[in-house]
Amino acid sequence: MIPLRDTQPSYSAPVATIGLILANVLAFFFELSLDEFSRNELFAVFGTVPSRFHYSSLLTSMFLHGGWMHLIGNMWFLWIYGDNIEDILGRGKFLFFYLSCGVAAGLVHVIFNAGSRVPTVGASGAIAGVMGAYMVKFPRSRILTLVPLIVFFTTIEVPAVFILAYWFLLQVFSGFGEIGRSHVSQGGVAWFAHVGGFATGYLLIRLFRTRERWRHRDDLHW
Image 1 (cartoon, helix red, strand yellow):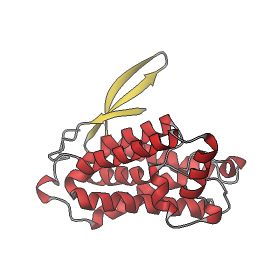
Image 2 (cartoon, rainbow, N blue to C red):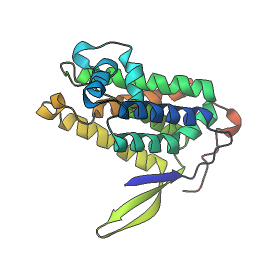
Image 3 (cartoon, rainbow, N blue to C red):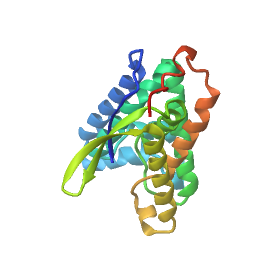
Image 4 (tube, rainbow, N blue to C red):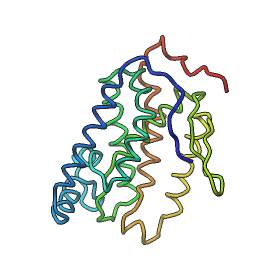
């Protein structure tokens, strides 16, 4: 299932969300300007490497991506869910929230992959936090989703609480399913970063004061 857009309106311009997307895109174009050796060195220095962990990498790693699909997928999810969370938090608090979720996601990844020498990059942990917050604030919003049906595709609207819960459980089972496999030490998807980011966003959004007049905008029909 591929989410295409949500039905939840925003009442302010998503300036911070667009800024984050532009920052990630510009960083990626910088990566493309490098030769393969320099790019690998960039990941080794600014990515999160659990076996030689530096706290600064928790911030720098979330603006680097391993390829076009990695970048496009992350930015697509940020665009779908980020504008609404920015809308209720405001730009400054949204940026703080986003970065906090990314840092927490990186820490969880380091804990579960302590001996790994593979650099981890990507904004998915921070974006997972935004998705966790969306699940709390807009559970009744509907997500227009592309669904494959054997030989063709169709679109359906799925309540956000269902599609986000499904995504979270997929990350949990995938993460625990790969514990102990050689794939973990060789790189791949940082499942536990997704889990940690989502859980952080789900819990952290409850501590933030949101814009009361828009709090109940998710009261749409099921």
